[in-house]
Length: 119
Image 1 (cartoon, rainbow, N blue to C red):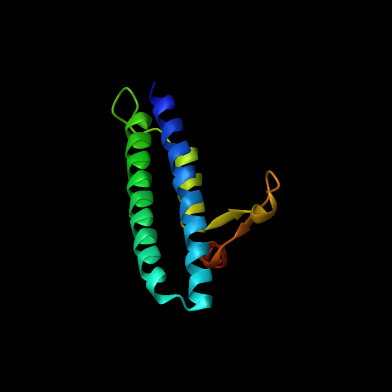
Image 2: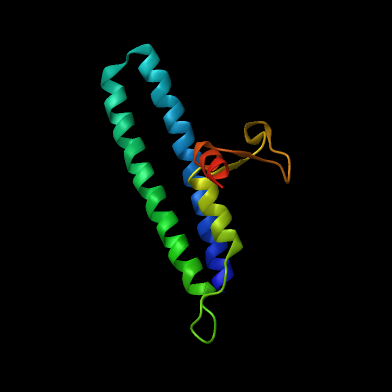
């Protein structure tokens, strides 16, 4: 049952992420055209979508943390949570993601490069 709710949250996060992406592309187009009246309302909508996405991520992280608690109260390592966090914070990104992706290949983002160079 917990896995179902996490899967539902992941699906909702994916849907809102798609809406954020399309809305940001629309805002960028409006900026290029100089449509100031419509731009301000679209930017407000984009901010609201970003807040919604942040709240969904927080809910998912909280549920994943609650589900990862062991029987004796010790936390169990959650690999999917760490991978999700690293992708969101752009430490790593799936290679060729914009072209459909290739399984198993990752590119380092700026924070990931800095961490790699530091280690």
